[in-house]
Amino acid sequence: MRVLFLVIICLTAISGAVNAQDLSCPSTVTLNGGTLEVTSDNSGDDTESLQCAIDFAIEAGFRDIFLSSSAYDIGAISASGFRGDLRGKSKGATVVSIKNGVLNCSDAMGAAIEFQVGNVSVRNMTISVDSPCFGGGEGTAASVIAFRSNAANCADRTVFGNVDRVVIAGTGPKGSDTVVGINVDVAPGCSSDQKVLGTLKVNRSELRDLELGVQTSIGGGGQVDINYNSLARVGLPISFLDANQSTTILANKITFNDVNTYNPLTGLGITAIYVASTAASPNTNATTIKNNTFTDGGLSANGTAVLVGQAEKGIDHKMAITGNTFQGRSTNTAGGGLVAIDTKDGVISGNTFVSAAGSWITLSSGDISQFFVGREVSGWAIVANEFSGSTATTDISLGEGTSGVIVGRSQGFPKVDDVTGANDILESYTPSNTAVAKRPRSVGAATSPTELFYQQLSTLMHLNPLHD
Image 1 (cartoon, rainbow, N blue to C red):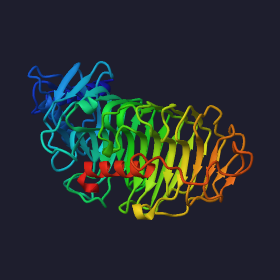
Image 2 (image 1 turned 180 degrees about the vertical axis):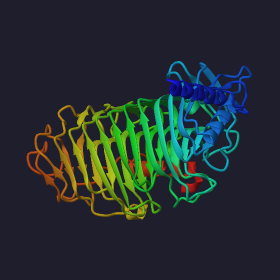
Image 3 (image 1 turned 120 degrees about the vertical axis):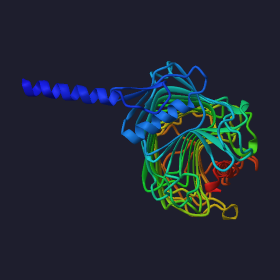
Image 4 (image 1 turned 135 degrees about the vertical axis):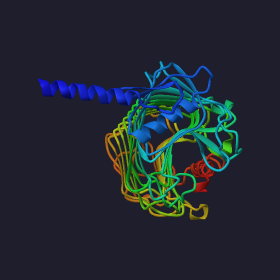
């Protein structure tokens, strides 16, 4: 008992010493056990308080920063090597507002809340943003949450990011800046061949009224999980550029083609998920899109749920699109559910296609003169889907360069357009295994899938000069 009593006295003394530490922070930052608590500042600017709390947490090894007030206003926050949680009370009870004109977006993508390397979770809050940049102009952008490699040591490039139960709300085209909700990429000042490594998890969050939702370029076989989220009124909800990552996009509700005020040359406002590789891409990539609901907002005639393509370099990109619901619109005469260009080896299974699109599934080789790879497209299986609710002119378009693609039986008799005649069509709306139309699908130069692919590629590359 005496030993136990002495232990309790020692622990109490140690705890008192820790709680009495001089944090060298504003009085709005306090230490409560192992938690750094930050209350809002009456001055209307909480940047210093939050930055000091993060810096102290890194230095002293604390792992929990709690925003205990209901509302905060901040400028740019940056941390290197933080391991822990930045959390509020809940999505409705903690609102962090990014102040206008506080981010330097002139040299690279500015970031409001930036974590370089480390293992970080941002949880339980709403983050609002309007026009945060003071530098830059056309071709520049701001990230709300950015996970990056170490700008001071480019060889240090592993970051584990988690965004859980967070609302990121912008003002869409009304704002003066291009805003990205969540970005994972190499740090400014590092070369594009020193890709950020690690993972990103986005869970049960909401992203709305942004130019881009989640945008990543992770190398080294990183892991990306985007699960149970809601994305609406986002110019490009999910995009991956030159990545070597194992991606799972699971059980999200994504509305696309629901903002019609973007410049058409950007390609924004039309596509839900975009995956592109260029000459700078790693050699492999993997994407699983499962149990999501894609809803076409119908604001243009060429809304496309998933657009995938390879330019200048062919890579091994394994794809699985399973169990999704694609809700189309009768006004969509030129878009699609999935458009894959120069992409081999995929499975499209268990999906339900409702209402109209230009073509629900389009597989084709690209045109070399347009800098696509132009290779044979094979290894796809289109099986166990449901096309009975489709009113599309063409359900499945197998374009130039396709061969050996399997279209299985018992899928509601989809209308199949087999341009090459070299594919295995086991069921089609037509009486025999012949194409609905022996020609590539043409939807006009301004709205073709290849034009859309390059518009969006150009937009993504110009937003971050490291990819330009």
